[in-house]
Amino acid sequence: MPDPRRALIVTSMRDEGPFILEWLAHHKAIGFTDFLVYSNDCADGTDAMLDRLAEMGEITHVPNPQKGKKTVQWQALSRAASHPLMQQVDWIYTTDVDEFLTIKTGAGHLADLFAARPEATGFALAWRMFGDNGIARFRDEPVTEQFSRCAPVGMVWPWRAVQFKCLYRNDGTYRKPGVHRPRDPRKGKEARSVWVDGSGNPLPTKVPGGSTLIPTFDDQYKLAQINHYALGSAENFLVKRMRGRPNHMHEPIDLAYWIDRNFNAVEDTSIARTAPLSAPILAELKADPVLAELHEKSVAWRQQQIRALLLDSDAFYLYARVQQAGSTEVLPQATQLLLFRQLMQMRHEVMRAKAAETR
Image (cartoon, rainbow, N blue to C red):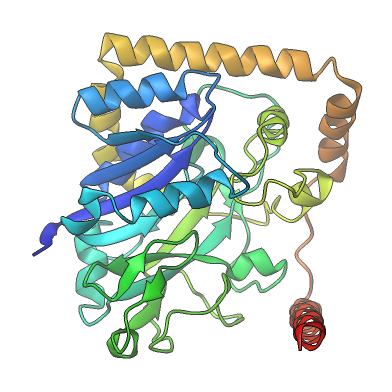
C-alpha cells in the first residue's frame, strides 16, 4: 500500500540550474517527500546538479533524451507512469520548476491542505500568474522574493488564468500522470473520486477536462494556489525563448507569450510564510561544495547566454519590446468573460468541423 506520509512531485527540467535549489527547498518545506525529475539536453549543468542531488538522496533523477516526435515533457510523463516510485507514494503532483505551490491554510503544509478537505481525492489548483515586477536584469536571488506582483483574484482572461495543475491521491484511479491532469482512469473508479479547487469548492467528480477550470470571478486561491513565475526578468525571458517550450515545442515564445503572462496588478507575498521553513533546507543544500559549485556554473552560463543574446538583433528587439509593453492590463470582467466564451465557441466550431471531415 502507498505510504500516506509520502507525496511525490514529477517534473522535467532543461537548463534550470539557477532555480533548482530554491524550488526544491520550498517544496520539501511544505511536505513533499519524493521528487522524480527527468532532464534532457542540458547545457548549463542542470543534469549534473540533479545527479548530485540524487547522490545526496534528495531526488530521483532520470535522463530523458528526446526521441521521435513526441515532446520531451510527454515522453517524461510516459516513462514516469511505470517508475517504481509511482507505486510507493500516496499523493502525486506534476509541476514545473517555475511553479511554486503555496498553501494558505493552517501552517502552510500539505497536511494542512489535506486536513482542510479530508474527503478530497484530488485538488485542481489554479495558476496565479506573477509578472516581471519591473525587473529587467537577471539576478541570482530567490525568485519568490524578487517577483511579488501578480494577477488579481478572479480573472478568466487570458484563459491561462483558469489553467490548473493537479495534486491527486494515488489510489489507483488513474494509470498515468499528465501535464495538467492525471490520465487513463480505470473503469468505474473515476466516478467515485472527489475533486475540489484551490478554495475547496467541489468540482464534478470527474477531473476537469482539458487544462482549464470552469471560469469564475470568485477567489479560487483561498486554500492554495500555484505561483507561476513563467517570465522572471526581461533578461531571463530571453533565455526561456531560446530554450523553447517543453510541451508545445512548435509554438514560439514571443511578445504574445509575455503579454499573456505579465500581470503586476496586485502584490501577493503569501509564499513568504514558507521562508522560515525553506531557508534552512536551502542553506543545507548550498553547503554542499559540489552542489554550490554547480549552481554557480549554471548562473555563469545563463549570464553568458544573456550577453550573447543581447548582441543578436531579434533577441535584443524582443528585450526592448517587452519593456516597452509594460505590465499587461487587467480587462473589465465583462470583456474577459466575453473573450473566454468566444474562444470556447471557436474551439467548438473547429472540433465540429474536424469531426465532419473524418466522417
